[in-house]
Amino acid sequence: MLPLDHVPFYTGDLEALTRAFLALGFVVSPRGDYTSPEHPGSNWTSHAVFLRKGWLDLQHNPHASSDAPVGPRAGLFLTDDLDAAAACLSGFRTRPTYRLERRWKNDLGLPSETFALFDIGERISPVGLAVIQHHYPCHDTLAAWFDHPNSSEEVAGLIFGAAEPGPMAGQAACHLDISGFRYWDEAKFKAAFGHCEPQVALRVRVGSLTKVRAALDIAGIAFVETQDGLHVTPPRPLACGFQFFQSLPH
Image (cartoon, rainbow, N blue to C red; front, side, top):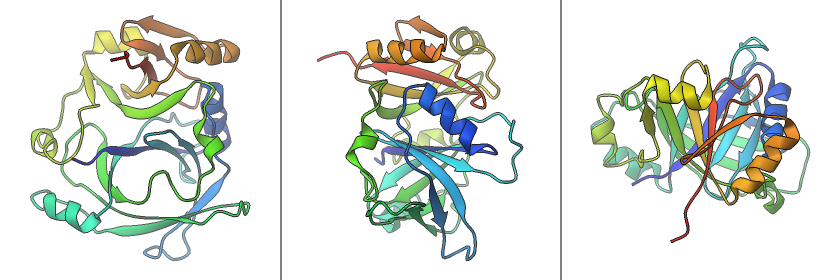
């Protein structure tokens, strides 16, 4: 069963997206660049938010308008053997494998991080899914980047409003841990997150809801609190919800 590795966000205004994540109480990495041997000459600028389990990839899309709404665009699942994962998913349509390398714009004395991945062509969830091979925690990270003022610890999944799992979700659940995906009716979703479009929210497990409240209060960001956690409609250009929840002690 492959765990959720990371969720990407694509934006025409990387600076504004970075400010939104900082306002939510996250630590954001320095700016970096992706290159790919399959796409010589191409370069994708990004920042990242690294949690103890999973991470968020904030990527610049030069073709997007600067005021375009931004939300989770995919879910990538982690493997240490991409060939073995492909064999397990041989009954699914997949796209050709490609590779990426990430380097920070300023030399921090860290090695680059290399990735190999393929996209899954079947509809499993409202966002596309992929499988990725790399080391986590990434080799190119510093310990301080994992300590967030809002105490975030895990990218736990996604919530979809007014949607249903795709036709291949049942089969995919044998190989991908999509147990962190939730499907809420439209009324419940809007009560928690307001009018996000599309109706999708990121689930984040935290160490302390008190620290989340403090970070949101400092930034002046409103939230709705229920027994499920704190539900936030964050600042623009983000146009998705955030659910912060704290695991109960065993």
